[in-house]
Image 1: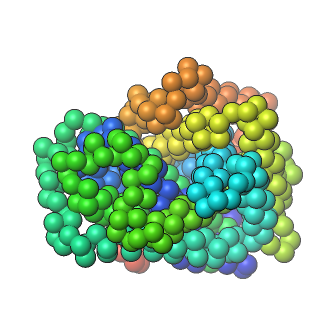
Image 2: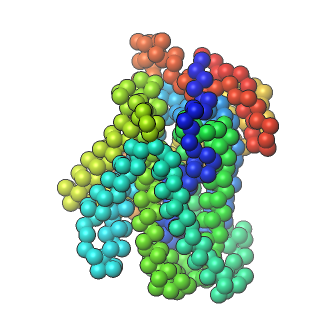
Image 3: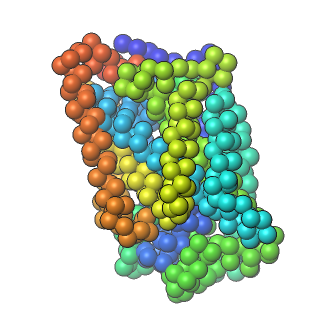
Length: 492
């Protein structure tokens, strides 16, 4: 039994560092600019704030159960370790490969969005730079920071997060100052509006706006006190993101008008928040929103890049990927080879789209980010189910933390998966049949993982027996108010 979950002497990440890493992955400003107008236009309009609140409560329930896994796995290994602990090795191998695919696709999609929107912002200010060069600069910076110690990336992301959250907070205050309490219309939370026509679409966009918040469980090896900091960062992230999304979208409803927000959003789409910024913050505020949208996309790209290469490292450590990817830099203590491989993959895919003359947003971002989003939401549901599997196998535990909360989280996330699959063309914005078929990649990759695990069990039983075990620890009970760890090692 491995007990590698104990924090290494060189652990440099505290709760605040991890919080910035995972909030950056969710990209609050990008979600407001890119996702909320779609939810207004195609969802239930003024009821969108209630959808964000519902998604936040559901994911908070998921986080309660996920914290049990985080303490047992020492806060490392992500979905792979959680599923191994609760559902066994074959589902864990499938989850690991799906996670690798999903996080890489999301990173690639965000790199395309970074190039596309940076080109548009520069063009709006009289500078002509191709999206390819904009994306290349962003990828180079991501590669450099991804190679270095994670604390450096956390500090950079902290600065970027303060900027994008600050400008949205300024917009919120300006709307409140002009309209007072009328900027918070009660109709947004009335049952008739919140559960009205299009509520399912609003919920889909709400859930996908949280993508990446669960990635705290990938940084346990680099945290000072992973059994405490990882769960706390996860709780803080989902609470902060849900509250911020719900409040800002609610104020946008009040600024536009609850009876007009669907129509206005349908016409303005991605320009909605820029128009609001120009109206309430002046030209400088609108320009600030444009610039910070680019930095938000860069922050999200860096955060998901960091998550993707840590999945590669974890799988390589267990022999599920080439062993070279498991290497850790002697000075930076980073998975530098996995980071270089991930950077090369992103550059090749983005370069391929550029050479083919495809649109960086309509073709690259929507397809890759849509597939990555669906995979991550499905893995969240599977991780919630794994907590229930752990309770069923070992018994004992707390009724709320290990039964009710993960069950509620699983039901909400399973519904989200169903909504995303059913509305994948709306999520990607593409009528292409090829893109519509992309979700089939996820079950195919999962099936490949199950088959590979079965092959290992028969051909290399000793290696198979070690899958997922290096992350599971015997955690001491937590005296604090958060969920305590279960006692006892997992069954071999």
